[in-house]
Length: 325
Image 1: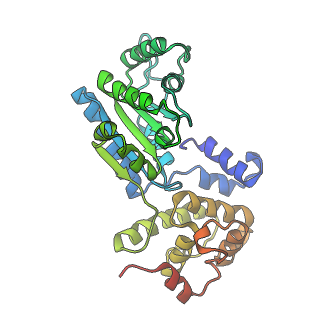
Image 2 (image 1 turned 90 degrees about the horizontal axis):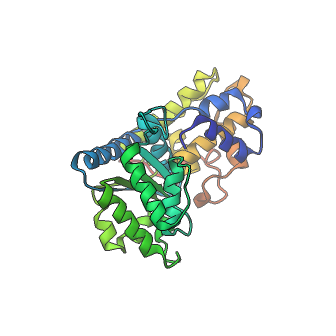
């Protein structure tokens, strides 16, 4: 989710308040997208796959995989927003250009429902109809509106073993889109999606151009520690940019506490900061007690049970979290 208004609405819904009720410091934090090395690498690889498809005229298949909360939706949203905008004010003499289309795969996809969602993503005036009608509109869409890439989010819905029998037909339709139109297709979904797509050998072979695996932040290697520290440092800078004093969050123990509290997932890190900003007296600044109280209200990492990482002793935190050698 890349739109700042959408992110604010999501945060307000999670907190059970109106967006107008959010503190300005919270709004400032939520409005920012924090860039980090894995995001930049993923954006570069995705763009490379699109360019390859355009240059070669052959379909290019890519996978973007990761467990919930590691930033997949932010990355694809950022790609669409930063590189193209869908649709954006890029007019031809006839139709608005739509180089990239992003849509979520329906939970029980059929060929016609998938094609209809593609047309809806392009804001086509006639997104429904018979199979032959939809195929014709897709062909016109690709040719006249310059479609180069289709991003299919939550693609694991398509391949789940309990999905309806039309799965194979939909899989074949994706191959047709790639082969007939030379499109770059990015399948985005949870890590289990890799096992699911590998069961469809012919489709899997088409998605070996780039396979991008996102993982949570960690501190088990020096490189991982540096990336996590940099991310948390930016979070702290955003808070301070709003005029709020904040304790040093990049010390070894605080990084370990934050990692335990959020399982290293960017979504949960951001959610914890939002909770702290909304529930603390910001005139006094932010300290460990504020993180403790916020975590008591929303225990984000069930893997550590009822333990509060901001209450644990430094030695216990180190024992539970670990650290790079």
